[in-house]
Image 1 (tube, rainbow, N blue to C red):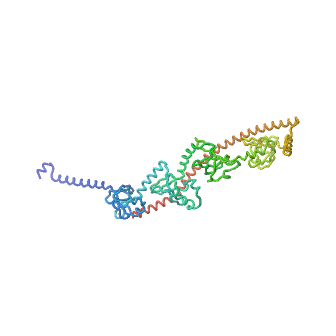
Image 2 (image 1 turned 60 degrees about the horizontal axis):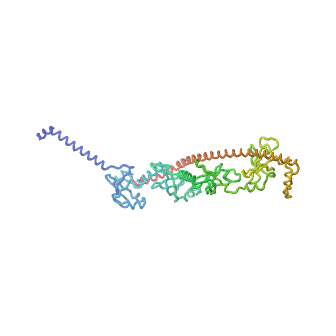
Image 3 (image 1 turned 90 degrees about the horizontal axis):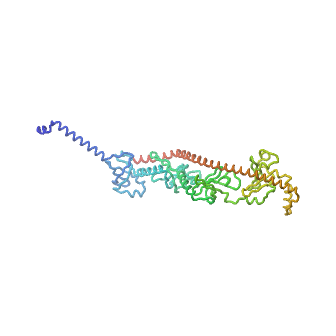
Length: 493
């Protein structure tokens, strides 16, 4: 021993202490390695394990811990039958760690939650990439529709259901509004994902908006002016009606709805009504389609005007007063203009000095322009002595069927003066017509601007409404989450 100690150059006591320390370090190293190999699971983790045994509806899964984790029978019984039949001993399976300190120290696992986590990932990808999901309406509640996305329960608030679907059903109660939609296919976009609160909010309206833009671009390439299509009225505004044609909206301006004068589209149309329209303009750059209803009907003006001629006396009702004259209705489909210069022999500043709306008066036709659908009328020439001979001749012609010839120079002179006055009146009427056309063009531009503003406001209102609707449904979504959480707690027990 002394020689050994001398050889080592160390006392015996020092060597003994060193050996003890070496043994201690080896034990700590082994324990550390054992902890690493066990890889103790933590709640909320996703694990890939191997089915160790199946006892009834209860499954034991080895996930590398000191003991197997258990998937409770209550959850297994609720899994789809096809999935349950695929579970065999030795098969790899993904599980979600619910609790590591369950009854008797067991590790509680969930297959359903593992499947849902994969669906949550899919939902987040759909929302981030703004892609649509095609599914089926599985149910409803008072606030909207239920759509399953894999193993998740998605909610479509009422404000996010497309207008066309809402128009198809009516009623005051949820059963009346939504029950008929169950089983129907639906295309939605994911607009909110909250895993912690288990909230998945979907929107058919957002998906429809994207679809409409795509359809409209494609439809614009297929359409040409003059084509006739069948569509459905989607909304009414002061300036016209919007009609949906194969997914794209076109505008029927107020002036193109009817040959008769109307103040608002609701007088002849209603939302949801199916109509046949003619395409009268296409603006591919601005993606606008101009439509017409009246151009598919015969113009009653052409038939009605055949009964009238220049120089004839007619009875008219004053319908509108403007700074340049007064409009008078001769019959239902005919309206003419009495230019301010034809109202009186004296100079007046405004037609209201002579007439009022609703007055029924006798007028003389001084111009008929069939190409522009215009009738020029005169009040001051009704009682003119110059027209007495003309009126007498027209009366005799109607009675005897003959025309009296002008046979004195004085009558020719008077007729020539009448022609001069008529030409002057026509010139003024043309100037007035041009002013009306300019006014109409300005009105159309204003209508387009208003249309853009209305659409923008509608989008903003829809977003506000969607936000409000989502807030209203938070309570219900939270209630569902609490119910599911309570079920999980029961499973843990």
